[in-house]
Length: 264
Ligand SMILES: NC(=O)c1ccc[n+]([C@@H]2O[C@H](COP(=O)([O-])OP(=O)(O)OC[C@H]3O[C@@H](n4cnc5c(N)ncnc54)[C@H](O)[C@@H]3O)[C@@H](O)[C@H]2O)c1
Image (cartoon, rainbow, N blue to C red; front, side):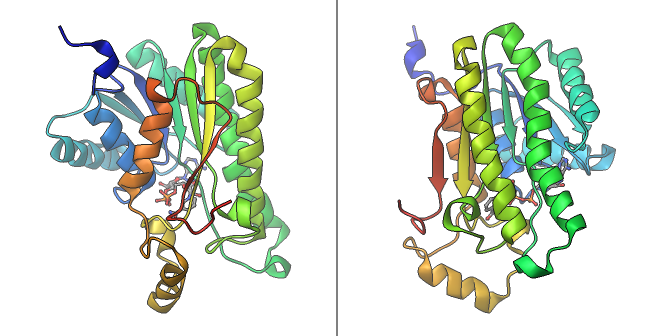
């Protein structure tokens, strides 16, 4: 009989909510594919989700992993607490429970501090920080009832080094908040068997890097010890570790996925 300790399907039948997975180039999508390959049932949320995107994602995931994953895709704006509650309820209606939340939703804008308007600041904080708070809160309502659950949030190198290679002060501040929020969740909910960890990526090849010119990208790569940008699947690998029992004793941690550009 197979020893369960060495079961390589790390998320067998786990219901995993992944936010920010609408683009096939995104970290959220790569995470969805890897999780489905490890047996997870997927709840894919995004503010731009619609029937066409949902159908395309299903086809693409099936092609990638060799079978059609069990999934629902729901339009959800994480800036709205009501939307988040509704999306989690849709997951419960479909699958009966949720086991894991990976929040990859986010926006970025590169601007100097003095050119960031009040409106731009509010929008950045609304999506990246309040949105993370909202979706975590909706998931935690279920996790506390279940006395188990795992949260993985995505922050950024920008929060650690005083601004982004991409992203202004408002982006960095919002991601600093995500680190603090995740640590608070980890401490408050550990007694209920719930873990929460945060990842700080840098220079992962997704739509988010599209704003850089080829020359800017070359300059940045020259400063990365691994001398390349990261792949979305390499970020997904860290999400898999943090979502699975492999990291069962890890909570409140900040994991760097940055090619060595910030070693501290
Ligand atoms: N790519 C990088 O180099 C990098 C570096 C540091 C941090 N990050 C972080 O990683 C996460 C994933 O980024 P990505 O590179 O895959 O970007 P991406 O732009 O490909 O994906 C982000 C997704 O979030 C969705 N989204 C935006 N606002 C939303 C809202 N209000 N509600 C729900 N969904 C919303 C978008 O529609 C998009 O599909 C983000 O939080 C980003 O800040 C990325």
